[in-house]
Length: 298
Image (cartoon, rainbow, N blue to C red):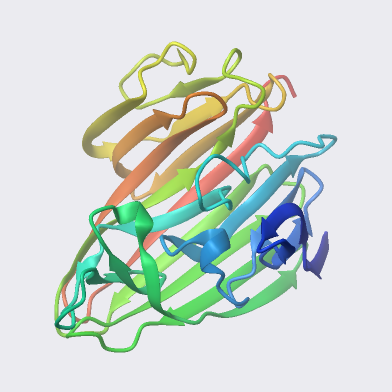
């Protein structure tokens, strides 16, 4: 398996008339697909990645063998251009807001302290928490391991670790996300995966599957959003993007608490599995997610 560190530079993203450098990525090829993972130890760039998603394990692009188009949409209509596949903790944890500030201070688990107005998508960073990370390779398996410690913020504190395992010649990537409450206040949030599937040039062949619903539903004729709630929900799937026989499946341990589907108007959709997270001080939880990419007719 080839692993190398690469800094990728923007070809068409302009800021103040100058091409802006894209975030650095860690690139690996396991024989089944080539993946570009955002380097969590790189400098956070609010204009590129915003301050919602967990940098550790964030897939900027994934190319199945023999394909030139990523199955994940990297750029889009949103003012934060880096999409791909990432995890997020939401809702955020409320902090004390300094007098006179119009934006509320919040703790965005896995990211840092942010300031948010009436629109959660327009958060601005107050403080990013750093990541320590390492690439490791043993017996044909490569892995990214990253750790973040928040420090104390109005009684909240946590330690998070993210392990991403890429076995050689396998069709799955394994995520292990561990959150430990090291503060004095309980942490209540949700952890969810956010895959921005690349439906370009359109939804004609795209499909998705949610637990308890039809095995396959057409993205083109589906409503803008759907939700399935419960407990112990099995995995979800999507396909028909980039090439018709490529499909993706997401499953987790423990199983999910709810799953959402949404689409934009033309070229991007997602199936988002959620876990409920409730941690009292001193408690620790690990969530494992498998991202499987395969050809249906292989």
